[in-house]
Length: 174
Image (cartoon, rainbow, N blue to C red):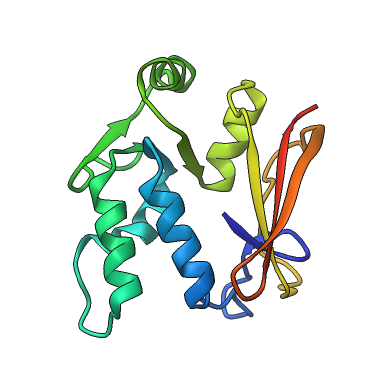
């Protein structure tokens, strides 16, 4: 997930937001998604990502490429309020820990986790093997923090510039 320099993934309603990624950063995410075994989403981020289910008239090649990669992978949606999910998605209700342990044992490739509340739950359960933190040079000043729960002790294992304006820090639990 992308975040602001001050650690927010979403600004305060009506306030500043992170702008969309530029072409190079978008291509990076296209390649990242193409290489995944699947995506595990919290409800809010899944509802935002449903945007990619149907092509939009203003999309260019980069957006069509991302949508194709995103649609091709299985998605698991953790929600107690949703009654159904879209194509290639499975609704996860109870026993999050057991479900995720099963995914980790069965799915080939990385499982992307998106949604700060979900990531916080999985962090508390010790189920996240690696954090890829993408910082962009914007300050939101408030909103939804990337780490919604307790901040886990992390160890930096890599850092690199990505796209036009992002730095990716790769960390593992300390």
